[in-house]
Image 1: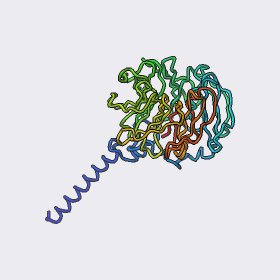
Image 2 (image 1 turned 90 degrees about the horizontal axis):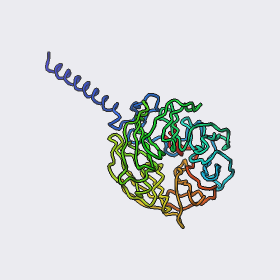
Image 3 (image 1 turned 30 degrees about the vertical axis):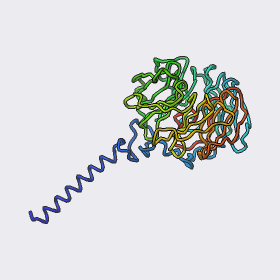
Image 4 (image 1 turned 135 degrees about the horizontal axis):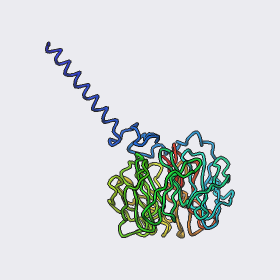
Length: 379
């Protein structure tokens, strides 16, 4: 073999090796590469493994729901009604009766339907987001809250007082399987970036449980430090940390989901309750229900960057952002109002009177490809 041919051969082999190595690198979700295949079948692909919320940016409303009117749906837990707010007018345009103690208004995985979860009447109230009106009632056990598996295969009805998670068919709500939870007050959940598991909070026993999404099996249980009263839970954009609001500890626990252990705590304010990621994915908004404030956790530093206070105090609970991210809507649980807050400076834009004990309000429509439930947690 000539010296020239030998050199050319070595170069060709080296290029092939490098191409193979690069191919392996780009296919690994752990490397944070766009376009990697999801870990569970049927789940829409994660397009950016560094930001699982990439498709919830302003302007990314699904064409299927682009014609839905912009409305805010407010379940009034003590009034057994849902108030509907026109965000342009900043006023209630209708109120309709639902079941006993509606807790949250939840968008379906396919974005076609909204459901009010009527805890004490064991029913779901079906709401048409095209007309913003009540349609019918469906019977299910103890629907305190409701979520969807990321593949859209199951609706998960969170039955708080019955200490169980019911996996149901998302259209008929026929029961498929029940996962019993060894804790009290199971309330809120969020999923890992690959959809393999989810973590649920148990507020009355100060615990967290981890559940295998695909096999629907309990994987473990841990306690929050000092017992506590864990509320909402939200995973960071990169999927590395689960943030858990603790109403007794007055701040947010940080959980390594894969290892299922507590890795830190961020003090935010009295009665830390609801959690929401900003539209630019830089902050975690924390509604401090006990002191009438919202803390902004910088997701890069994992420290509170600033705090907005509601003039005269209040009881900010659950809610969501407007589609463009410019307004943060929150229910005022003990003041029977809804707050509209400017996300540029934290200014209170409006305080709108609704029914008694408003809770998990839903702002609709929302940008994103599918919903995993609660008040409109999108992916």
